[in-house]
Length: 215
Ligand code: AP5
Image (cartoon, rainbow, N blue to C red; front, side):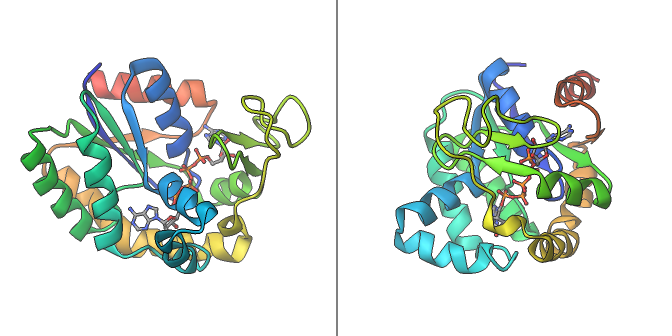
């Protein structure tokens, strides 16, 4: 399983970040999360962050040119396998990813699609808390921190993401259906789509994905 090139595809809150973390820790794949990179830029107040914030807080996508450049930079730094969390999100991004991978001599092994019902997404995101420093993800219902609202890993106060407000979550789901769902056929047509039911304990979901990739 080492050295794999994977894309994680799925609606907001479907568990992509949680699984990307497991894949990085257990299989050594380098996690590249466009959402994390953009949120870091927002926190640092950079030009990129100011621009990204306008889009993210409305539940809209950040322009393709920006995220494609970020991913290209990150992929250049990987020497082995990689896992893309939250990229590509449009057909344009997917086509440009193909060109980047070709240029860098890297391969894509699978696009893993996370299937989760909408009501589960709303439930998960309203209970999600994140660490603004180390990006660890918690859930006040299913994965609470040991100390109330404090990150187990680095001791930082946990926060709720600005785009996890219910009205923004609804918009993110609409944008996912309109712009990102067409990627399902894009990767299915190339024989790269691996669909998993992403409900149940994260450990179980991890094992479903490993099983599906082996098949
Ligand atoms: P991004 O950060 O990528 O957000 P997203 O895709 O909407 O996904 P989320 O991070 O909300 O959820 P997730 O699937 O990672 O779930 P998680 O593991 O956290 O992007 C944010 C914004 O940035 C976008 O809206 C856009 O504006 C911009 N952006 C990013 N990439 C872009 C791109 N390529 N192009 C343009 N714009 C881009 O889990 C959610 C919760 O559920 C957690 O609390 C977790 O603990 C819990 N959980 C996880 N798994 C389970 C399970 N199996 N059972 C129960 N609970 C679970």
